[in-house]
Image 1 (cartoon, rainbow, N blue to C red):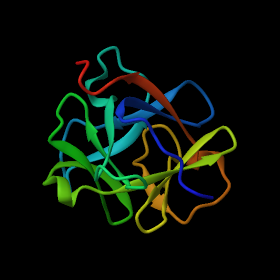
Image 2 (cartoon, helix red, strand yellow):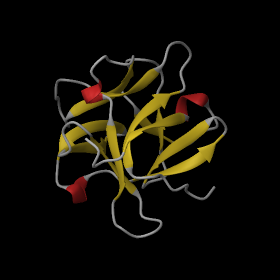
Image 3 (cartoon, one colour):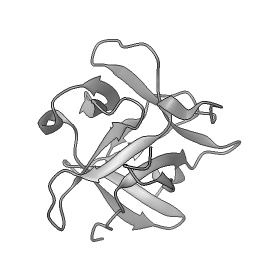
Length: 148
């Protein structure tokens, strides 16, 4: 399927898991490649759960980079098949596209690997895409980037 355009802004990524809402969450403590990115319950203070999604380049069809809204120098990187948050140069951030699927979107890396949330609390992995709900996400638009 062709990539779908996403309006630049601040989002919450809801994982399609069985049970209460789980959202993409940056953990508090860095380890080997940065802070692991997991799915977790909604937090009362969403500083680790709101993400800036914006095109890497200001041209149509550009892939997107994703950064923490509360700490915008920290963005998503993919290392060893998993998602991490780390303070790296914008050029070193992982780039993603979005594909429309039944019930939401599939987030794909530049290598064509899909985000997969196996269960709440597990680190988000990048895997070969399959038609499974663990790879389906709902993007909740929170606000424009400059409306902080």
